[in-house]
Image (cartoon, rainbow, N blue to C red; front, side):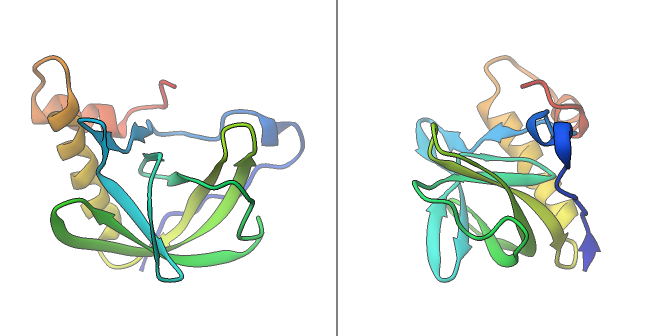
Length: 143
């Protein structure tokens, strides 16, 4: 298992931006393109990054210190990425839960990077190269 550790911040850090990497809206042409499966339920993601994801939820779950298993899926592609994550926040106003990866199985981190690069290339509104897309994925959070 490749380790992608993310420790939830403490104190004043908890309200600050936690993301070190850019997050990407998980929609293409207005439709969901990335999904998470947890406890047998498939949920469209709000956003996805190399560090974690968020999904819509009106109620907080699972507990913030509970590590849980998940499967990431990409619309129209049979590939899956399995891993473990922890909830880092629940935003009641926007009805979403933010999760941070604890670990991704096998080559999951590399495959996720490839997924994100492909997503950037497909959703870019200006012409960019694969090298440009890779730099965007690897770069710091801009939002």
